[in-house]
Image 1: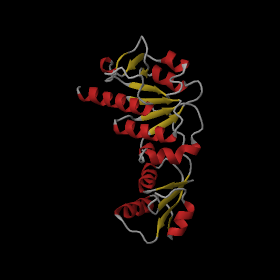
Image 2: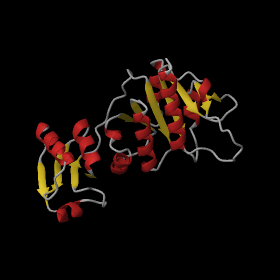
Image 3: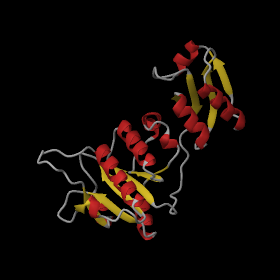
Image 4: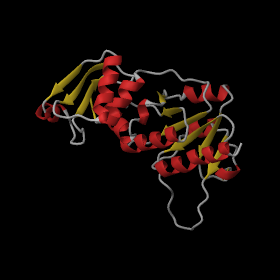
Amino acid sequence: MIFEGALSVKAILESQKRDINCVYINEKKQSKDINYILHLCHKNNVKVKRVSVEIIDELATGHTHGGILIDAGHRKVEPLDLSHDFYLYLEGIEDPYNIGGIIRTAAIAGCQTVLLSHRDYSSMENTILKSSAGTSERINWVVCDEEVKNLVQLKQAKIKLIAAKRDKKSIPMTQANFKQPLCLLIGGEKRGLSRTVVELSDHFVQIFYPTQIKAALSAAASAAVLCFEVVKQRMEQ
């Protein structure tokens, strides 16, 4: 499939999580990004074609490619690494732009692995990569099966499953222990977290709202607030 733009191309070349067929570069363009991409291609023995802007436009699906494309395969399946201390699980979030944005936030906050609920994400990979500004290639992500066995694995490895849920059992996020190895669990805005995931959870946390407005933060905004509460607490150690 074709991925567009310097950020995406650099991330794919650097991360080596895909089989790469060819890089296409506008024959009339020169820049530091292009020089670096050519260096990575030479280093990794990746074929490069300098072609006309007409060919670039024909291959591309969008208009923000900047004259740089890469033809690469689907993301290689990654096993769950149980040596990390900050995971994020996303369930029922269907918009690839939201998924990419959340991955970007999580990666910047130091999350090492994102787990996604069971579904086929192959048609979304391009959008997820672009909307994550390349960070989705630089972080591990695992697609769970329908029984969410990966969450069970985390639990068995003494990694606390902390669910974002407004509930009688919930405590304010500022009172939760985010310094320990953990996985934040965040559900989509339509259905939230499934019963299976809720029952697996060790703790429930909620974000304090200082107003009585009858609305909740989006999943993406909630993920940002919670991820950076993890950062805040761990900086205080």
